[in-house]
Length: 476
Image (cartoon, rainbow, N blue to C red; front, top):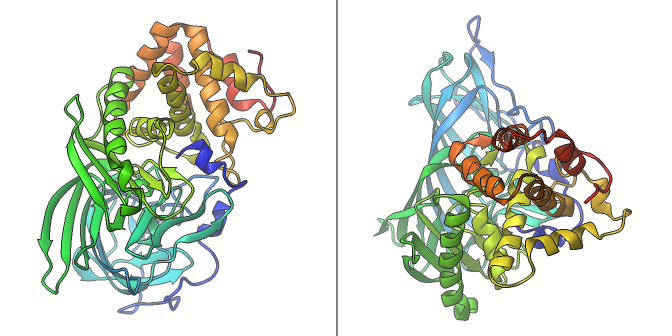
C-alpha cells in the first residue's frame, strides 16, 4: 500500500473491525447442527487470536492453514454472495474446538473431514467443534457453507473502506489489514500463509480477476461464467482478491519473460497500455535489484471504485479509482518481494513492508533520472524536530495508527542510513540475500538486523535503535 494513499486519512481504528461482543449479522450466536459434545481429556480449545499482541483477536490459534479452496457465486445486482470454503490445515495442538474469522453472512453448515460439526458465532469469530477432537499434528479439512451480502469495513480513519466492497458492476476487493473475513472464513492474520484456489461464478459479461493464474473460464450450468484462478505460492489472507466487473485486459510477457496482465475499467481505457508497459518495465528492473521475481505473473488492475488507495494484492496490484503514476506502480510491485513473498509475522513490523517499498520508490525515481535516494533522504531529514514523524518510531507500528507516515518515510530513511553505513555493495547484496533466504516465508525486524550485521561485519544496534525505536530525530 502506498504511503500517499494511506496518508489520505489520519488514524486507523483497527480494533473496530476485529471480533466484538455482538453477534455477526445473520448469526444467532449458537448456530448448530447437533448437540455439543464434551472433549476428552487432553484436548483443548484453539485460541481466538493467533498471538499478535497488538491485534489479539486477529487470526486464530491451534492450527496452520495449508490451502483455501473458495467456491463463490456473486450477483452484482443484488450484491448477494453464496460461498463454500474448504480449508485444509494441520492442528498444532490437540483441538477440541477452533475458530475461524468471518464477518457477517449466514452460516448454513460446517463440517470437519466430512462429518457435521457444531458451530457458533460471536462477533467476527466462527467457533467450530468437530465431531471428534483433532490430534496434534493431524491434517484436517473444514468446509463452511455461507451466504449473504458482504459487509466491508467502512469508516476506518486511514483507509475509509476495505475488504469485499460491492460496486455497480461487481466488487472491489482489497483486504489489508484484516478484510479477508469480509468474504471468506479465514485464519485472517499475515502470520499464516497458504495457497489458494478460486472458483467464482458471475453473470455473463462480468470478469473476475483473482490472484495467480487463470486455470479456466467456462460457461456456468445455471448461466453466467465460472472463472477458476490458482495462486500456487503461499499468500497471506489480506492479499487475496476476487475483483469483479467490466474490464479491458492486455496480456503478454515483460521484456524479461515474466507473464504480465493489466486490466482497467472502461473509464480508464486510455491507461491500459501505460499500466501494462510500466508494470513490465518496473518488474524487470526490480529483478536486477531485489533478485528473482517470486511469483508466476505481474501486472495491475485499475478499477473505478474511488478507494483513494492502492494495494499490492499478490500478482494483481489494485489501484482504486485513479491513474497510478510510475512511483506508485514501483511501490506496489516492490511489495511483491517485500510484504508478499516476505511477509511479516506481526503488525508491529510493518516497516519491513512499507519502508522497503517506499525506498524502492526512491530507487526508481533515481533510476529514471529524478531525485536521487540521497536527496529524498535529506529532504526527509530536514523536517523540523517537532514534525510528527520523529515522535512515532516506525519499528513499533501502533495498532490505532498502523499506516502512519513514519512507517513509510522513516522506514525508508532507516534503509538509506543503513546503506550509508555499510556501503552500496553490501547493502544491495543484503537486499538480495534477504529476499532469497526468506522467499515465501515470514520475517521479523530482528531477523533483518541480524542479517545486516552478519553481511556487513558491523555492529548496527545503535543505528537501528535510533531510526526505528527512538521517539526523536536521529542524527543524519
